[in-house]
Length: 252
Ligand SMILES: Nc1ncnc2c1ncn2[C@@H]1O[C@H](COP(=O)(O)OP(=O)(O)OP(=O)(O)O)[C@@H](O)[C@H]1O
Image (cartoon, rainbow, N blue to C red; front, side, top):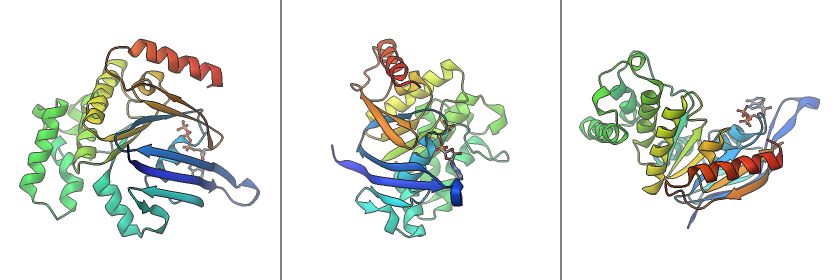
């Protein structure tokens, strides 16, 4: 598969003077088109920082990140926001939806700001996605009138509006009960089966077990990886056991 992200020895530091330290300490990562990967590791090991660096959300202090052939460190702010808007989708633990807008309007808002498409086709696409993720009947609901799982489905719709090449998820199931979390993971598996790459930061072995490669971070580096076959929906318990065993082995 063609490489979509090639990060070479990236360094990201925070703090001043003696306090300054490398939160990413020379990390090299490659993610292929259509790949489904997870990043695990202890709190503070640099997982979210890695995600923000690979997505061009944050600049790096050393090394390079090439996304879809473009070196992000030489891209202008406009180019970066263009790439993020058109080629990447973001899903967070708590979807950042606006209280005074209904579900549909929240989903279409970022696309509406981008004037290149017309409102009717944007709404049509949003309704198609809402149907696909099982929230078609909720388009007029306020965001306070739906469950956490339904809200996350809306967040996923919003992330899919521009048909991204990759979805970055930072603990996307972290605020959900286990049933909703598994349903959201079913949805991610389907989205990935359609060809969209997904990178999830997670503490949850059940989430990571759905992916095909887990990168384990420690102190700003990737200390080990675990490769798994593509998930076909059948052997989740065995996969979770394999991931849990690996976590035990490396002391997470
Ligand atoms: N903007 C920032 N300014 C200063 N320090 C930061 C900043 N962002 C992250 N850090 C520090 O970098 C380290 C790594 O943070 P990061 O959020 O990447 O960890 P993580 O592995 O995702 O942790 P968690 O599992 O708790 O979310 C932490 O020590 C954090 O305090």
